[in-house]
Length: 163
Image 1 (cartoon, rainbow, N blue to C red):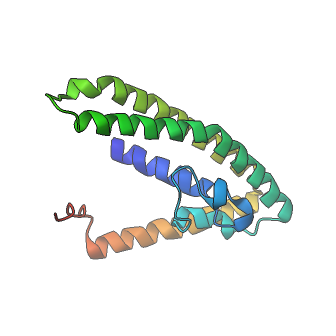
Image 2 (image 1 turned 90 degrees about the horizontal axis):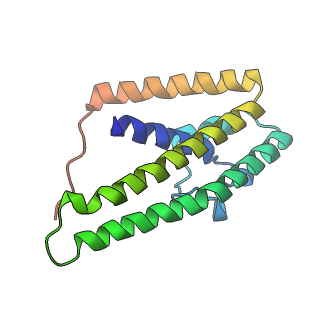
């Protein structure tokens, strides 16, 4: 369940973090996590030939999303820092020490997920039916390519890093 949710979140973030410089979503063109800018889902909108007006509208949507998401991302970082501090503290540490922090993290992630979905729907509303069809076709091709890669290479999880 968490893996599916992680991929959904990643996919929505990818849709939102457009590769066009004019559509930068955070400071210096980065999304909430700092973004690498070249994930396949992010390229969908780049390939549907957005007009200058659409680019402007999407940029405004993305900027509003960034302003709304930035404090939530900062909250997540704070929660993760508190978890690290707890793990590295002296004395006995059990799972119960993290219950409140895990609940807080879950609430923040739900808010971020809702923001991303809302933003994706707004961006979708800017596209024409032809552009949506182009994006759907490209998405189908990417899914097929991914399935072919899995069939050839397998779907094993990568091993943990060696120490």
